[in-house]
Image (cartoon, rainbow, N blue to C red; front, side, top):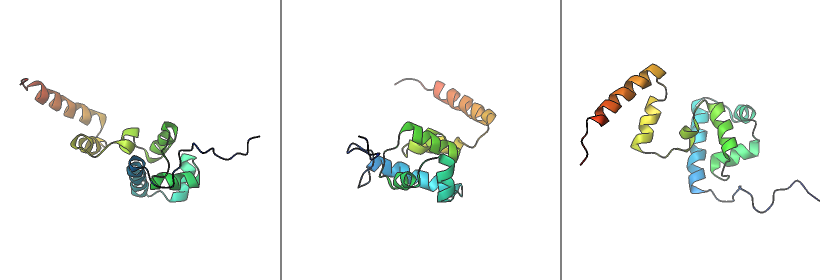
Length: 120
């Protein structure tokens, strides 16, 4: 008979997962940047209070479905939540607020610059 309790093979941890901790910290920072109170964020994502708390602390490895709910609530992409800190990712973040026509113009400039390189 099912008791409603999670089995021992759960995604919740007693110590943070290194990657989940980075993602959780990014989620918390974005939530605060958007001025979402914890309770309003829980309501908007339709995820539980305990789950969001563990998520922000890296104690749960979220599913894509959960990350999609978080991204939607924060009005960001999944990539915004999980991308590593690299020059490419900083460029992505720096351009995410641009209008589509501005991105298209920038892309044209980059394509022109890259196309002018000769292979070694």
